[in-house]
Length: 112
Length: 114
Image 1 (cartoon, rainbow over the protein chains, first blue to last red):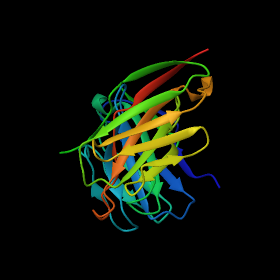
Image 2: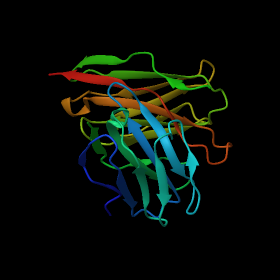
Image 3: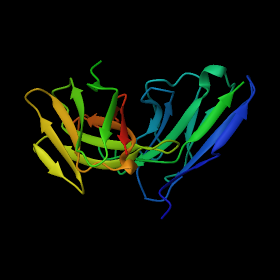
């Protein structure tokens, strides 16, 4: 039981490049989330998926898109990366939107 | 909007002493609270949770206290160890608000002095 897994662990992009961050969970959870964490700050919600087939914007959705591929997988896409998107990205999942969230190990992204 | 906050951004504690990390919340309708621990370079890890129908809940070396009157949440760590050094976040949820996600505080850094 791996819990929540994220790939890649590290990534460096140039401004304007695109990439997709992958997240998968093996806990049969219904809800999944994407957060970003900047130095000295807490977690800010980018997008979430309350259940398979639905996605909703969080606090900071601009510049990102998401896809809930199936119940296990939730991807985050940066279409045109900007230096302001340099951050650590965490994926999380929970049984429902009302329950404890379990986090992945994070992806450290640098945009030059 | 209302949000979860913390009293102290940093806390230094001598090894073996007890630690108390505080959290204030402003939404009186919040009814579920969680504490997370985040070690350097890792994702947040669930520690303990408490529902609003409880005042206290104990885990292994950790206790969470909830004071609904003053909207205050605390995490107590007994016999603090070097491995407890991390950033601790509280989070709140409104269990009657549908699928609204958790709201996280900014975190308190706990440093354990050996």
